[in-house]
Length: 171
Image (cartoon, rainbow, N blue to C red):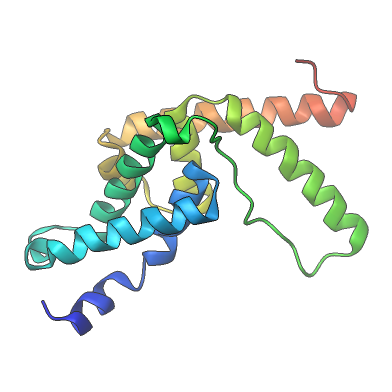
């Protein structure tokens, strides 16, 4: 596979690789480094890429594993999981503030979810992956992915409802 074919292969999903790394690693610099590492690994194995059913699933799996390894390392002991790509440029100022507040609460609630549920919620609801793709990336069966997603959404919904109903989240 030459350079042009490689770029054509990875172009449709390289931004998703970055967003997943950013979700896990928080730091833009860390996410950029992770993305670069993933792309280098893919480039070094470019001759074998044709043997995979989904190069994108492979890239996302490598990203997930690399990012989780970084989080486990001593250098990453202060990192936390967040998502900061959400903005609504069309809404008025009041709506923007309400959206930021809601997203802030959602992020706090997502931080309390088990790691697996966080990743599945990110891939399905933010990145719009199909269940089959998530199952491959997470090395799970589709039913388990659906159950984990359902539980994550339920927890998120219940906690957001409490927050909006009472105005104060009980810790």
